[in-house]
Length: 397
Image (cartoon, rainbow, N blue to C red; front, side, top):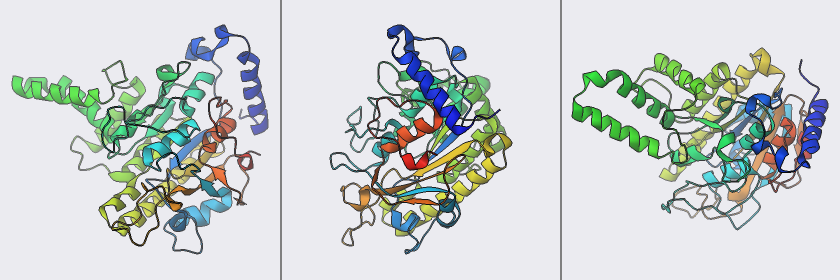
């Protein structure tokens, strides 16, 4: 039976408080296996990264030309719109990886690529992610905490856990992406088709697999993802085949992965890292506006799928927020950059709607992107003890 929201939050947070003062023996990271922790009963949360980089003007401003009409006209009246959200610090870059980690950790930080690669975004969080907090607090398996990631942002495959000594890999999330599928597919082909290849062909395939697996340098096992995820990829392969010419691409691919995840994996917490807007770096403004429209269509599919699912319908909350905004300079050769830390690149928004969230509320006061993590924690019943942003109280009934 589904708990009343206030009763659920009260029980969950008081339970955390009751154990927090018992010393090291009671620390969740040193405690019992997942099966002995409290079962999670909801709500499910779907965090949509409205990326890569989207200004308010094209997304939620009714006075401008809006490219996300479903978001503006259908969803805003159903929830809480925080229309003056900011990335309120000049000390960090307004980028996709940085914005993603702002949302996941609730902390602004300065990140550098771990390999020192120019424009690289292989970052490692120093404080826990919301996935780690959830899995440390509740008995939620890895395959029910998911990041849905884009094929052009491979560095962001690895934001699944932090380096914090009390959290980390034990409480990691899992990832669905084209890179993960390609790795799965190559491994299966080596296992099943080795007899049909020459020795040199087989070695070439093995070298390719080793190179792909080396990208995930923090994973100890090279035997693939969890059994549940491996079954997911097996079903994907049966449906779309091996060629890569049949399945959707870009942000449409992310939507398809998310829809299938809801059906097959039943995630409790899922983050979808949309990114098609970032093709504006090629210089064509239509790439940006078309990307917003594709995200809008994907969100419609996600909402309709949730509403058609009895277990999700009354027990799911959506959080939609950009990773960053966009510059607004008429003198730039390429429109809508975001690397110059201009005011509009730090101006974003958030929309929260779903089970137990107030309908039709517009919040004008300035809020912070890093407040999203603590708010998700409050909604789901876990404490974000290392997050620096406070809870968005308007989203909590």
